[in-house]
Image: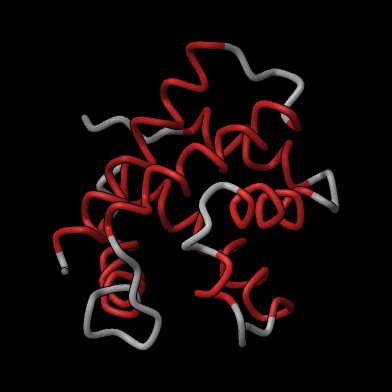
Length: 134
């Protein structure tokens, strides 16, 4: 039986109790590398925040090898591929992961080293999938 990452879904739920979680992620991510802010120059952040909120759940499900996440993951990977409407250089994925983990660690009062390692592992799976579409 594959790892379902239920601990990450629970952690994510705790993070979402903080209404500023997604906003703090974007503040952290945009400040993490000078190549990132220009990518968001014309972004509607209301839509983007909703997309990320859903995307994190999909990413956890993808890492758990859920067949239900396959289509959504493929669609997100295509959007962020070199030929997609929002291309992302795969070299920037580590900044996304590090920013996400920083904000999770600050927000989830139950976060410990083991949980954070599992977050890193799971987000690495989805970022690896995205990178393979480039």
